[in-house]
Length: 232
Image 1: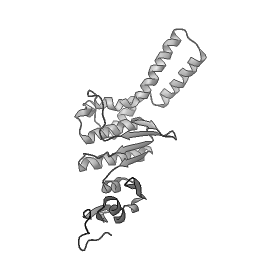
Image 2: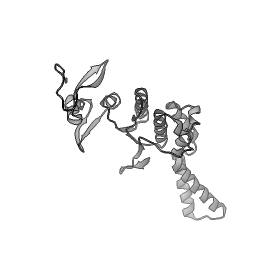
Image 3: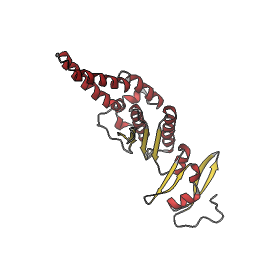
Image 4: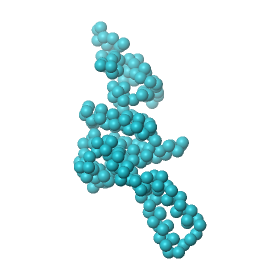
């Protein structure tokens, strides 16, 4: 899903369960990013036919010029290059591109959907639980690709995610919600035992493991922490 913010930025949304026609291949999904180009091309063809029929109205010529400029700016003549580049960066092989989208695994679907949004030239990616139903390997692969693409293209990703350890691994800023209000917001320092207890209702330690910050639950909801446990 693609839409514009009030500031004119292009926002792309990856939902948990992307839905496409049953006969769509991966290639079809990737190229659906160019639907706006197809609309421009159709209008340009209609105007070309009118001009070929003898119309020479100045407004028609101006409109054709505007459409032609937009078509080039949006990459209308280089879609093959763009698709090949993004597919390669996301490890979407030629073989996968010929497969039906519905035949893919959850992780593969997320990668393809991410590629489609990048091809739409979004400024901000909105990812609604992108790791839902993925195994641990695919969770790290997908979020690693998101982070890599954000850095390479200078775009922003906003994730809705329920695993604080995945957030710590791949995100730079954090916002915790509880009962419809903001419980904490900021850098990684807000991911602390107090925040975890306030939001999730459990005791936890926030510690370092091989240089990575991790959240380790040490007491269930409504329980006191185990004897001798620390929240440091």
